[in-house]
Image (cartoon, rainbow, N blue to C red; front, side, top):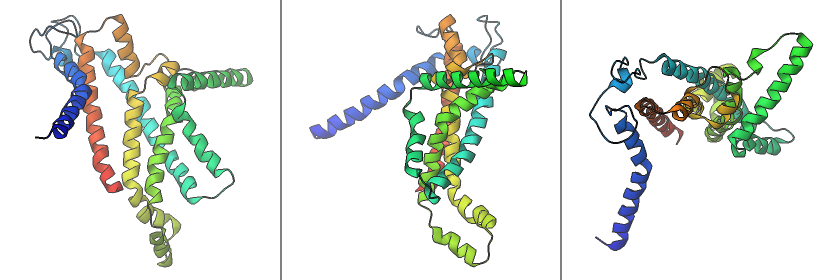
Length: 279
């Protein structure tokens, strides 16, 4: 075997070890029969997943109301973010690829700004804006609007501010490949605009719509920086994990991390499969 070939294989092996070794360690010690999320190995157990707390004093993540509630909070944020990102992203993509209007180039450039702004700054800006808006409306309407205060709704708006851009780019890239003569042929055959959209355009866009939704779901579920600035009394999963680490971690952190890795890996694989139709 030649030296360049050997070096190339060594580089690939080192890259994947660097990439997956920390994840593997987390996965292994999620099954460690120890109250600490680190070596040494003391035996195999499922207590950190389905335990009732009789062994280590704390229940497993699938039996702990705190973890179950925080996972539900993450879903309450991630699902609306994904749906809104796909719907609004489709409209944005249509404007970028089909419409002509003054300032279109500037509009496209401004849409990218949330991607380069640090998440903490973005979160602080959104918090300051909506807090002032809520205070003004409270003075005017003599009632407090909870949705504009730190909480799940504000987290949805904050995450949507940058995830929407990514969804728009995914859908716009697919729409750019669309052969508009297919729509023209459908119109010539007497199809209405609504029917053409439903039977020709949207089926072509469906891989991008599914892909954009999955990406939005994943990004929302794992987002920390922006979420930390907007969280209220119902913290999503990343915020709860951060709080648990500060208070003193147990292997339950490893267990929930493993569950998230499996879920994210499954969704990422699903996105990879759907993206094949985008080629």
